[in-house]
Image (cartoon, rainbow, N blue to C red; front, top):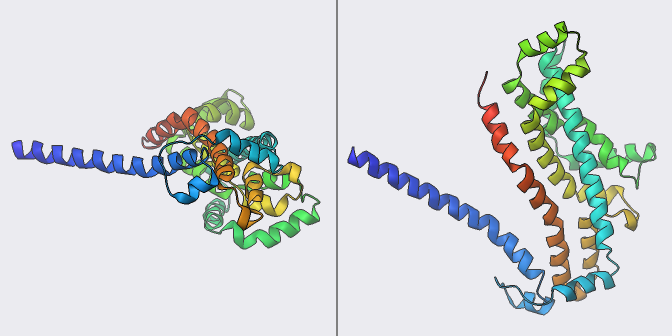
Length: 280
């Protein structure tokens, strides 16, 4: 018995040490990014430092002198990320609800097709995607980055897996007997029950849209519509005069909303995993 307790204690200590090591691996790069946003280019080129410097205001003024409108880029990114998140979560859950609840010919084939789409990188279809958006007149338009998310295969797959683990068919049947419409059942019953899963999907969708540089750089051409990551990239126009301190400040600004969103909704991730693990 003593040997069993000792082995359990050793295993627990090892687990804590491993988790602490992983925590350091995550926090240190973020901390270095924040520290470098307060340092000058010369200080950054001299090596890594874990202590902040005193060039934060200077770096911000440098951003303004380069023509980088940080508030406007921030607002563009927020609008695009929020709109993309709402579209992704709502329509993906709606599609997943149809796949889980309704038994129609070809349902299995359609579900497998969604899985295939998840495994296809967006970069492989970017030429066709751009030509299609050009034919529709949606180039240099945020709609080209928002509307395709109505058919977000990854979110549909996640929503289907989540609804299969928590959906109660008897509750849906009872609502139908009471005269509720199908959309009414989805809005008044499924959506409140799926809040943890929807919040998890929302976090992933928000982060993906906020960090979406590749598609936005191809579609958006007007600098007044640039998102924050795109504006930061414009600072690297001349490699011999790259202001690393200003770039780090811009990058630090891009991670603030992600941290805030995760801090607010992270509890839903744990709740969603817990609910999805129990089949009622």
